[in-house]
Length: 254
Ligand SMILES: [Fe+2]
Image (cartoon, rainbow, N blue to C red; front, top):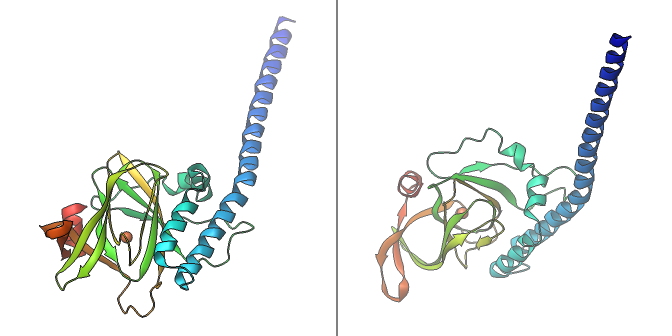
């Protein structure tokens, strides 16, 4: 009799625990699905808007400088949590190994959801940088790009590219400040062309889109042009920045 009572109690207890577990699991699943159902259309619409704007600058319907303003407005309209959920940031950064010099480029994927454009005009990546390392100083040709800080803190610097010389670029500092999550910056052939972002927190992550070939006829390759911004000071705040090769840029500023 005693034994039977004990068993009954244990069974009852186990059933209770099972119910609680089931309920908790159901709640978690429901909350996640509800969250996804709520967030995905918002994020998909945001990507569609980003794509339309990218098409506008690629086809010269708007100037690169106008694109720089508009893309920063759009970047300000997405909640970082929503974007990070949309690109499955948690999974993307699982077992992440940072590089010792420079930034690791992660390749996020957008989920195949309704409302997402079938073809994207822009390329995308997420830079993962450990403390003290950088997206090293470089400019671009024939390319527009926009940064959105997802996580961590960085020291961000931009420079206008005033003139190209064979071994140097003449540049002028335009931005030099701390960047926190949610903050943005952009590059084009015409404004703030050179950028340099150094992680000041334990790690930092930057979402980045880029649009190639938005200056037809420029004749210049779209690759990076590495420079040393700590060059000779000229008049009017200008600096003569030496052109660098990839290895030297990462050795000096990684
Ligand atoms: Fe860049």
